[in-house]
Length: 139
Length: 139
Length: 139
Length: 139
Image 1 (cartoon, rainbow over the protein chains, first blue to last red):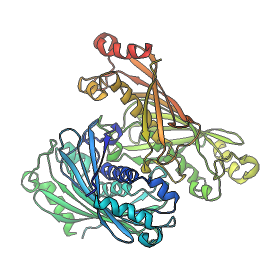
Image 2 (image 1 turned 135 degrees about the vertical axis):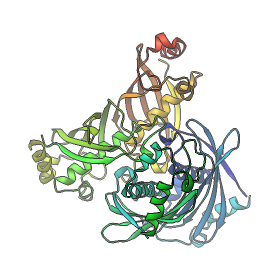
Image 3 (image 1 turned 90 degrees about the vertical axis):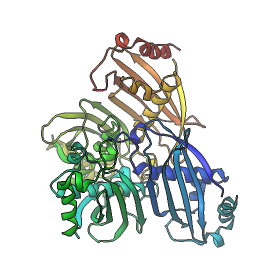
Image 4 (image 1 turned 180 degrees about the vertical axis):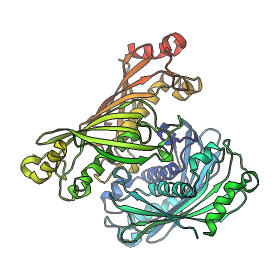
């Protein structure tokens, strides 16, 4: 399943007047998780962009189960759910690092595009990166 | 359907290095839209919270069609898709105010809770607010 | 002195667990105020960037007097404190729109640069924009 | 001088259309640095708040020298510049972790207050925490 794990410390500015993490910030945690997952494969997302391969978000969805709070250490999990020639589906789980309590789960879909946001067939055009994603899925 | 409309000017800090609005910010635009929709019913969401009725987000989903850019004037639409005794489903559309080009569509589900985030049966416990939502749906 | 005024509604995601606006957001309000001030002169900042004139921030400072809260309607004031051939100093005041209570005051300094962030002598190179700033200062 | 160091990876959502970190985010980096500095003294800021001691920001100032970019690993430095019975002055430097290039420097002033934001004389009322700050300054 190639499940990847990283951590995040909840920042003060990420909380809101309900004294919990504002729901929009989990979408940002998802991004942090997938960025670090791609880095763990030996190829930083920043390098992918330099090489002209972009991963714009086509859709995102989040389910909120329990709230995270200020200064909490979070465990961010990310894994590849689906990979096609021109698109990618990822899944996420945000939980408390110590207790394992699940706060939020979600998914995102991404297209592979060039820097002008035109779709590219990753498998054909940049097979070495396609194989990185594929390899990670099978792990 | 009681479709509500408001506007938003894209801020510099909402853009990212792709030179478009960062995808997480649309989740914030959804919140702005629903807040202004509730205000338009004659009852600010801030007053609802004061009265001990909270609307935490249970889930959110967004579909990204075209990117919005810096300084663009956006049209934010919001409407009620579903209303039950203890929960609410809203829908959103973010588009260019002048051309009507659709950037992002989405939905969110909310529970009605008290300030301790315990669910309440809005219809039974605070019927006057339930009726506001209901009335808006039928408009 | 050419004091410009605009308004801003405090958003939920701008508050923090202290149940007040997070202090970093006033720096963003300053930006909104100067953007709208420049627009009011008949020349949007987005057009200035298109024309290759950028205004990167050289320094910023804010003094926090009283906290703003969720859903408050703010009055954002901005005015030009100083203008030289290659730089600009602006001042700000953020207050409650209804009561006039002052929340935060501040200043920012900006350089005039091209798109590569190289300084330009605005007065010499783009006198028509220099004169816009100058004219606004004298009003 | 008790200079404290921590790191931060620049996030995608922290960049703007100038393709650099938006200037407002350095104010947030300052907060992260002081939070981690206080934690390093054996007393998390979240615990200080639980104990009824708050550190609201009275003023902040930042000087922007060079821009940080996406995915850059930053070194955040923080140190105590001044400590009085009821207030605290901190200083910051944000630089590239590898090259040492300085991006932004700044300072912030804080009051010691109770949870109602009323000033307290920390030295008198909670000497054990005052001594933590004092000890760190002398290191």
